Amino acid sequence: MKHVVVGAGPAGVVAAESLRRLQPEANITLVGDENEPPYSRMALPYLLIKQVGESGTYLRKEEQHFSKLAIDLRQERVMKIDRERQELSLEAGGSLSYDKLLIATGSQPTSPPIPGMDLPGIYSCWTLEDGRNIAALAKLGTKILLMGAGFIGCIILEALAKSGANLTVVEMEDRMVPRMMNDTAGSMIKSWCEKQGVIVHTSTEVTGIEKAGDGFTVSFSSEESIAVDLIVSATGVKPNIDLLEGTGVETDYGILVNRNMQTNDPDIFAAGDVAQGRDFSTGEYSVQAIQPTATEHGQLAARNMVGYSGAIHRGSVNMNILDTIGLISSSFGLWMGTDGGEFGELLNRDRYRYMNLQFDDDILVGATSLGLTEHIGILRGLIQTKTRLGAWKDRLIQDPTRVMEAYLASTQAIGFNSAVL
Image (cartoon, rainbow, N blue to C red; front, side, top):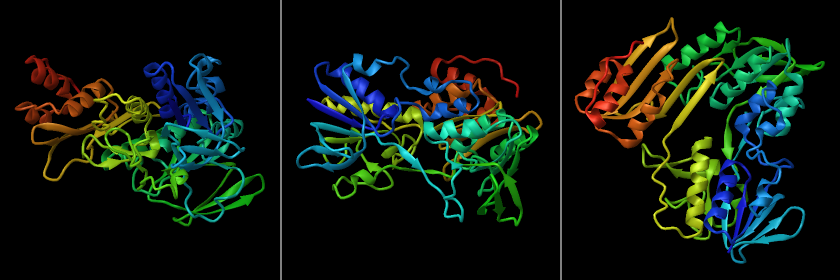
């Protein structure tokens, strides 16, 4: 059996390793299009502040890891898929044949149509090469503009702020992390960042960028302009689905897969940021560009590629955990709530403590927390198990911090004293 995995990120690496465990005699090829060992993009911010070296970003630290597993790791770009011949054409020439193919090509950064966005010296912090370039420039006193305060932007923000740079952040939405946090939590994160010396503009767009000496002049929709030495863009990503164009493999925003991570071609599978997989909370199919989902997809795809029965994707729980200059925030499931659902909320702005729980009947379906870390595992567990809380729902509406009590009472009929916010 010949397995080919295209994409050497977390989904592809986990899939290749899982395939080796499941089929010790199979021929396995892992193809990545960067001239780097497989690495984690989530580790790049730590590279910026020199908390890790380049090897610290690698997904597998041992130099001979893949060769010891008899996984053929190739640094090639796949240009075309021939479904009839079950063959891949490579940019450098030659081809690869497959019996089962996994597309784990991830996503790529997007840039808004702003004059000057194509100027040299504007980076996305998406590749290891981006990380090298930013790390060389982000130093004490460097004036940096970070475009975008979403999940990825705020991860980068943490590193840039710790570098000692003079950091300005601009976000077009009315709050920080708008796809992860509600108005209350998003505004509290903004306040926290400003308290740490970061300048944050929300409800603001960059309207133009011009080269000015060794740096840039940046214009905002507020008619303000600033001079900066470095611009880092984190304005969004999109799945890498171009490889499927003209193949007949069905795509939407991402590659459409069933609950076996299988496309409409029974020999082609997809996993990770490129796959439009099932969402646990809604039952709908969407792209969840987070590393835990990528590794889950990779494992499931591998099991189905070798024909294991029962390897069903039951849906990924929407899960985001973020450290913003020391303030931990998290959101799970339907954190924005459901139509007609009830919610409980507790807020202490002075201490940067916040919790919001969303219910559908007596089931917890979504949660947001800020400055509270002891409840994170329980919140996810209650959502994922769809535990019926009974009378505990009303108690949690009054005091959301009692989630541990609610969990124990609902699953083991045990209760403890209330936590204090």
